[in-house]
Length: 114
Length: 116
Image 1 (cartoon, rainbow over the protein chains, first blue to last red):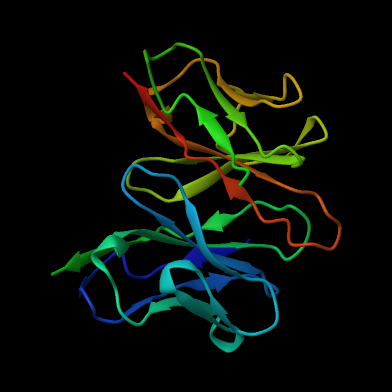
Image 2 (cartoon, rainbow over the protein chains, first blue to last red):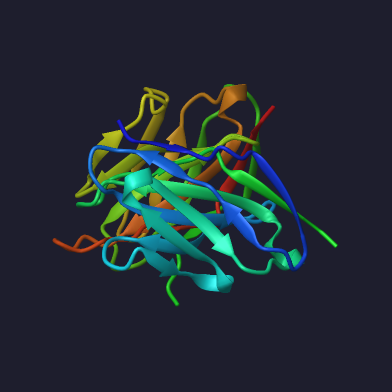
């Protein structure tokens, strides 16, 4: 069965600092990979996705993620965080065919300090 | 831009009562999903629905849950006899059905269910 691990439950960074959120997955083949952001009390917003091709994908709000097959990882990065980036971030995977369900990680809560 | 909508945004109910959560998927989408998120926990898959039948369901989706597409636009999740542990945010999602395509899932804003 597929699974997603986000090893960092809570990360605190200073505004303007760089950010990297870790995501590792377990799956028999290369799945589709996603990062979602959830602000307090809000729904899920898709930041970016990887299906195939270039392993560095760009998303909204200045985020990017790099797929590393050898490490089964899909880490999310941002060079300079803004106070508005404070939120919960979820990595998710699904099989690379059809309309299969998403499997989510446990999330990483990001706190930004001035 | 088309979006998935959900009503109500917040539902409060007494334990043992029936609730129906409603979703309007994006109009040309044919695959529908319900997920839930218990407070402070990860988002979990409940059920997927296509061609008027359940495609897949998780072990969470027991006999007290049911889904229905009563008309051409709505997709509902019914919980027959709510329990305290059903308190969660429930997300609806929908996707197109295109062979050989990625068929991204689009999420609604969620319904927060509180069972007292």
